[in-house]
Length: 156
Image 1 (cartoon, rainbow, N blue to C red):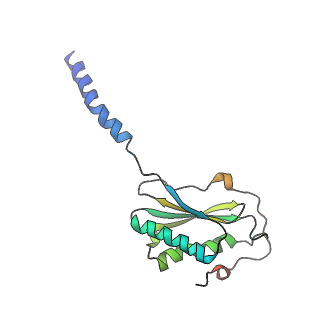
Image 2: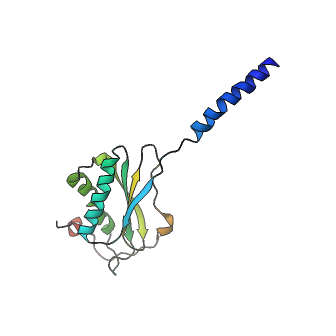
Image 3: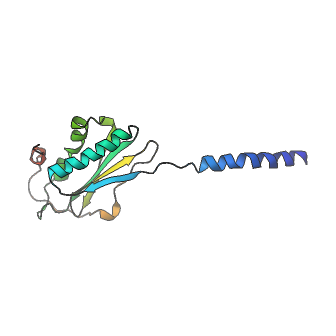
């Protein structure tokens, strides 16, 4: 009987600790921004804001999820066009804004109706965001030729 009382007392003392540890709030990931086909100056302004957020949270990771468009400015896309256009985002953050390369991750989300970039701030220990399945298109047709990354550089 004595051991039963000890066991009951022990469980009463331990259970609040387990409940508090089990339900410790983790900082959720947050979508910082999202943009489509915009001018280079506007894109860089958004990346500047993203860089400031990453500088304020140096332990967080910046995740860029991009989607190629099933059309681009009213035409079928070329193969590699989404990647070529996205190729300028991380170098801008790293080279111009001084964000460490390891802090920025780029994820290909597949294809959506139009080209789209999502900027996410992911705190330490949080899981990575995944591309939105609702936006995905599986049937993509391409026009002839391959995209050249030089054609998508911003001239600033």
